[in-house]
Amino acid sequence: MILAKNLRFLRTEKGLTQTDLAEKLGVQRTMISAYEDGRSEPKLSALDIISELFAVSIDELLHHDIQQFGRKASKNKEIKILTIAADESDRENITMVGQKASAGYLNGFADPEYMESLPQFHIPTLSRSATYRAFELSGDSMLPLVAGTVIIGSYIEQLRDIKSGKTYVLVTSSEGVVYKRVFNYLEENGKLFLVSDNEHYKPYEVKAEDVVEIWEAKAFISTDFPNPKDKAKPVSLDDISQMILDLKSEIIRLR
Image 1 (cartoon, rainbow, N blue to C red):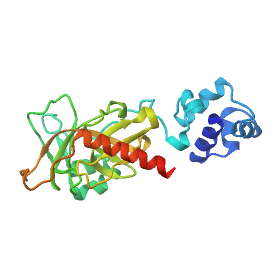
Image 2: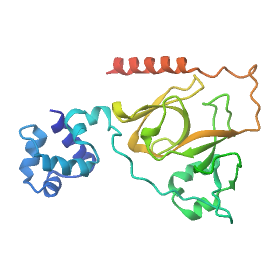
Image 3: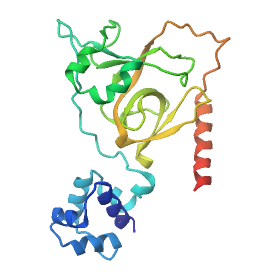
Image 4: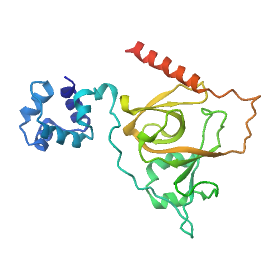
């Protein structure tokens, strides 16, 4: 039964014993064992507590195999307060995260002193209704944009607002800071599908819970002027769709 499997998986993932969970639900430990063996089912009041405790919906608990497919992103993430630098006129600066700084950004993005130590600048043509951050690219996975190109992104509060096929800078606990073309499969399996424009790099998935920040690409700054004669043609959306189908076929084959 899906509920029994989900409950056991979520409990162990959170590091709780059956006794710990029993105390939170106000039942005997043997009742938790019965839930996880499928011999009994929690009452609605207990399901509400379980839903809040593990940050999943009741529908997900009852009908979605979380261990196999990951969590759905059906609930809004908690709104994070960004650490933002401003100038003397109280106008937001664009903070620049260079290649060398990107490794430390994951640990320091909430530290005002760290953020103030990074370079800052303005671009007057950008709307002042959004918050922006700049990230320097490394590698060649997003050709024709080369290493050293600076991507300027606007902050996205909720993962559900990600539009498939657009490019984003993602700050993740699993992959660090990456710039990719993103496809949104949060409702299907709780994951994002990340694709490089350089076809030599394989697509991969990131779990919703691993995403710390996401910035929608709005502009880029580069001292390199792309020359179509000496750079590979960027992959089209049709190419990306075929890559996704090929990857899904490979996953099914491996199972």
